[in-house]
Image 1 (tube, rainbow, N blue to C red):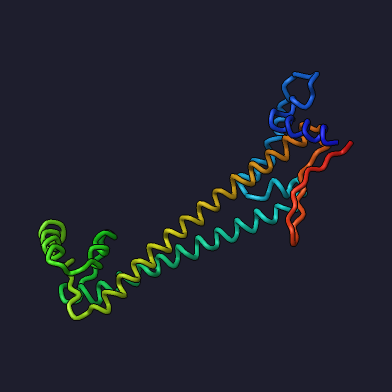
Image 2 (image 1 turned 90 degrees about the vertical axis):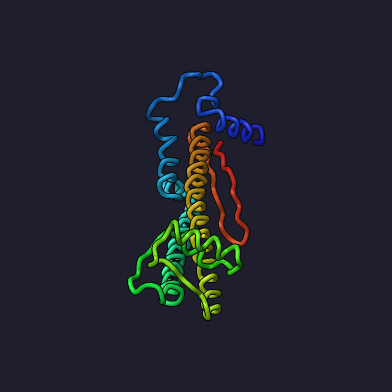
Length: 215
């Protein structure tokens, strides 16, 4: 029993033809297509390959995909909302006395607006205003330090939201790859055992993955 299991695992890693020591003929194109069909499905839609094989762990991949996409969209929306908020605050408070026409610019401009008011800062700001922006982009937080602190916090929230959204998009990508690799291993195991092997997952208080073999 254990010897047969080892043989199946080795065959899955080496390819379907390795499970038959006396037959070195490469697998037919149709057989290769069957091996790669479910991994391709899982790469496109995580869990689809497992669903095609009637494996209950498809629900896990579907759940991870939906949750990760929902969180990424939510965080992206939050980042944009906070971005509009700090831009509104900059125009309504810091730029209010310099222009009546609202114009947007690059994010680095708003980052500069949150910095301290040291002499070095004001010297750098004066140089920046003379060489990089016109009078419509001047600002001042004088008598508005509380609003400047809110401005800083809002920029930080926007940055963190966008950063977290990117992490969830990375999780989405990892979920696609994991589902495809899972489906490929399962397909190759089945092909190596002549269709008599399969991976099964029991989902409950304790999740168990097992290999079943028919003799």
